[in-house]
Length: 630
Image 1 (cartoon, rainbow, N blue to C red):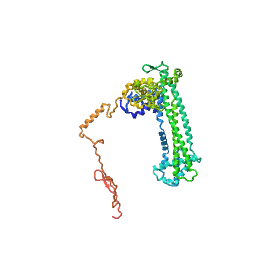
Image 2: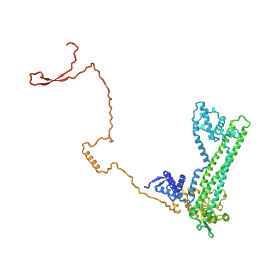
Image 3: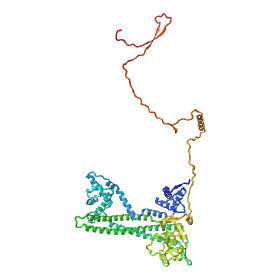
């Protein structure tokens, strides 16, 4: 039975089925990756999946399509999707990383803060215990040392006592919860500034790390690591791109400036060619992520330099303020302590950001490994590869794109170095080669100019490629969408989620049909109709005959209706009875009686004038003896 099911309720089931079927075929896929490939496949207009509802047949079709894309891949397609899912779920802006870290710290200290807010002080011992809790909370929130260390706790207590003595707790307990929290934050800033100043004066600073030095060394090491990884990855991409150029041959027709692409006599097998394309996409995606992380690290490096100089400057001002003075107004020194602590907290935030980025870099390095080509194919491709200098010399002789030879708008970039490749279709790669070479990615030459079609910008590696594309832009546009839809990893790489979602079902006719094959089995249902059991059914016909006779006897009876327990009109009657009582009676005289005794005599034993003897009966009653004379 083909009934509709809500898509949201079956997402978990679909992802579980995808991971299970992929594992059965030897491909370990995470749940997040399965969910991502499922959403991408649902956006494909080729399958015509509904936006909110799916049928059982569509669910099975969706599962088989996702499993086919993840397991039939020869190269690094599934690993590219895994890397994209990991980066999108773990990478965040600096503000988001800092906010999440603060939320985590606050959630861990929230129980202790709640105890401070709800504390009831009844004695001096309770007052001192509450004061120690306040010191621990301030130390934890500031991140300056471990409060379990006695030296750190002693120093923090002394710093807090200098600005907030024990006697102030009485006033603190009268505040509202919000005012108490604001008081704790303010004390944290002042106490942290005092401890940092004492550390710089070599009079304290237990448990406080040299944050400026550590950050400068860490950011330099991370930057060098990223630069080295980018250089190595760029060399690998150029080498793979050179291999792809040896497979395809481009010829230019002099009369029409039309560029024709043909496949050279098979140099490598189709499987090796597909592997080469997928490895190129995988490394380009990895290279994009590395450059994104490098921009963040360089921004952190600039912020660290500014913050370190600000901390140094504030410490010098504090030394000038405190020097040779025994008493200083609080309105002069407290703001400086608070500003010093805020600058130091900003350095701590940079450490959190740098640690998060380093973790992402380490994970991406493990995911960036690709399946290498065989040594024999590498030798064949290397022997036929064109030299880089020859390709550059060809580009140097080209001219600008002429608007008269294309049916699109021609744009010329003024500042090529600051051009963001995300604004260009296919992330700045040649649109003509991408379509004609079935998804090959070749870098475009932005100095030639750009073509605008349907509000999108397209770049090319030569003017001939631009002229060929410009004569029939709709064909190349539709074929490009066809390639992207068939390879889900390209949707994220080119940031084309919105374009795929906006595709209409009519675009399906323009796309090449994809034949899906799979092994399937069918099972006939044992009971296609829902079963129904009649409780009054009996297989014995004599049971029905007995019931008929019983009904006939009832019809002949005088009384045709009876009151039963299950009757709907049965009346409930209640009777109130008086409980029995035990009673007794006393008489005036006690007396007793005795029953008469029956005695039998035979008359005529001593002689009788009568003829016969007979039995005589007499009742004798008991008479008590008389006590007097009668």
